[in-house]
Image 1 (cartoon, helix red, strand yellow):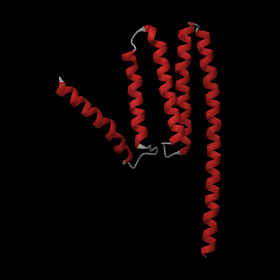
Image 2: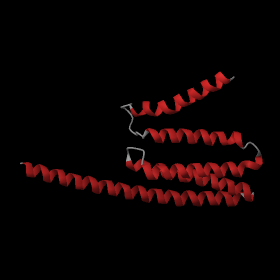
Image 3: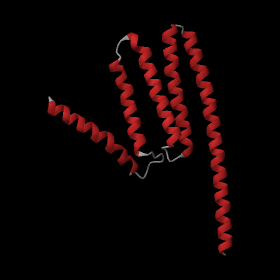
Length: 165
């Protein structure tokens, strides 16, 4: 029993920490992430899946949904701070999806707490629309900034090429 537990734990560590390094070495991937993000994201998914086991009772649904929302908000905050994807604008889209998922958990907890389907659905729809608009505006701002940086880089390189001639 002890040998099986130790073997399972070692296998868990091996799978958790070698997969992100293998992903980084694949040349055909368009979206590449930092290895730390992959480890954090995988552990967060396991934690969210495990919450169902730790809180199996019907009365624990609000606690489970609140913890899931907290985990998703923490992931969104990490992505906002670290920008783990090499495609800059995709990070903003991913932040929006994390916030929408967290809002869905909060709306479902509210629905379960108030036992009013109308309040839960209205809260969910308003939140999705507001977060979606904010994500779109952030995305457009980042694309504009990327284009300005690319324009400045183009001007700078063309100016340097003219000076070299």
